[in-house]
Length: 470
Ligand code: BGP
Image 1 (cartoon, rainbow, N blue to C red):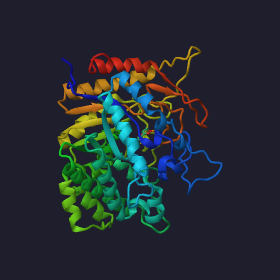
Image 2 (cartoon, helix red, strand yellow):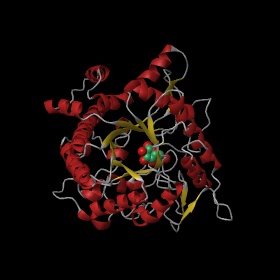
Image 3 (cartoon, rainbow, N blue to C red):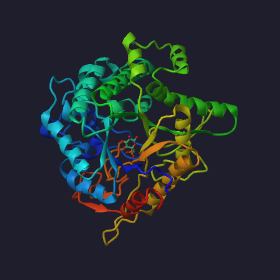
Image 4 (tube, protein in one colour):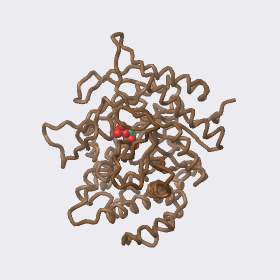
């Protein structure tokens, strides 16, 4: 008997813009991701207005998954994947975002991709929007600042729900929807103009995304009642720096800003706390009466979330901050850190699972988790990534404890970047997460050849034993 259910969804996760490449092939339009150049450790990625000659844009070729997906899926199948999470690149389907008709070639690509997965009985798990907003929607409408985006997104959802009705069951509406509060530029290209009230713009855009997500959930279930439509958030697990009540309150408030989104998507309405917060800030959301019915009728079936590291909140004003996924935190003296300064904390994942399940009582799906690390190839062409195995082993252990000891309902686990890909935060290639190594460097050199790391065999055993042999 294993701790995890026999139909537990083991797999891996990627996003289209970080692995596909082929950024302008077969009618694809430009997305915000296609305009991000490389950054580096601690350097924000530069976002250009249109493609500039002489600049390097890592997403343009990425790891060429667009042309190599068959071989890559064969490797996923060899590991025994039960599911594979990827996103649909919105601009393959609607190149500008506001086009009348979808692009048939783009639709065909995902037909072939899903067919290939299904051939191996690998269930596709699809993120509808993963930091890939059509650039035209940014320049023409100001991206999600505009209410118009709700309709464009709806049309996009309708096209893909109809087309893949029989192929895809698991959907997530927006990747890490709560990241909008932390970084509006990288995820959806929102630029705040001089004179605009930053918070007002962001909360208004969030309302548009929440309404769009709810409408999509309702529409999807009308198209196929078997669809499982989820939300997706970055789960930041905040600890208080000390037992000083002021620090405890700081941790509570840090979490509140993230629950702002999940409360709406799971419960179908803004929490009282959220409404009071908006009123206190003097933010009056522009809404239509039907939005509130939409939110009520468009709640999600499950919560997908990413978890990489935990964070520490403090009431001190002059604290020094360290890195982490998208947000900064006070350094936690009890935890080791990755080479990129992200804390390594499997217990934080168990806490995340407990907190989310206690609060919402809906199935949970760990759709991103992993260690970004530089891999060294030995002279005989091997990659001994025991540090990655150690990270994943301890996090899977935490999932099992949450299930077996705490009674949490977890439906699957898809480690991030199961094949090496472009880092979202820095644009680097050398920040690797994969079980499969890709020969490509930060400047775009390399053969793109794939090879199995030690973690490949380890994960294969893990899946075959349903998480018992780790
Ligand atoms: C998440 C994103 C992913 C991914 C991951 C790792 O926030 O959803 O797209 O890239 O973080 O972050 P990074 O690529 O910066 O290491």
